[in-house]
Image (tube, rainbow, N blue to C red):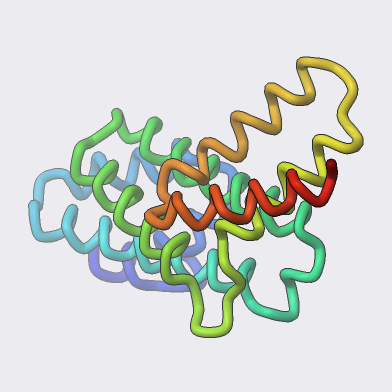
Length: 167
């Protein structure tokens, strides 16, 4: 069991980086007999989420705001699918919530301010989107990330400043 969880070449971390959430769900089901193994699996999920997120938020990769926000949203979406495939287990939901909240609010040491990135993304997308469906899709993506943001007042400040510049 330990090897299935920890092995970075064939274990849980590798499974989490593929689009096959069903394989993770089967592993979770297999591990469900042991509360200790489930706890360890949740810890690995949080750690993998943060490692992947730190890669997205590394200073060299955040030059393109739209690409960075899209990558964060896709990361959230991928891990949400894993939790859903595991039957929305509360322990896994908490691991996702805590892991993503830590990523969005802490990130890596030199990471950009997520509130500012989300704001820039909203302003960039509002300039190029013309129909309601595109605006709605952008809003849903931003809100999925915004939900984890603790400094919502900072987002408001960035948003108002960007809005004033556009006027």
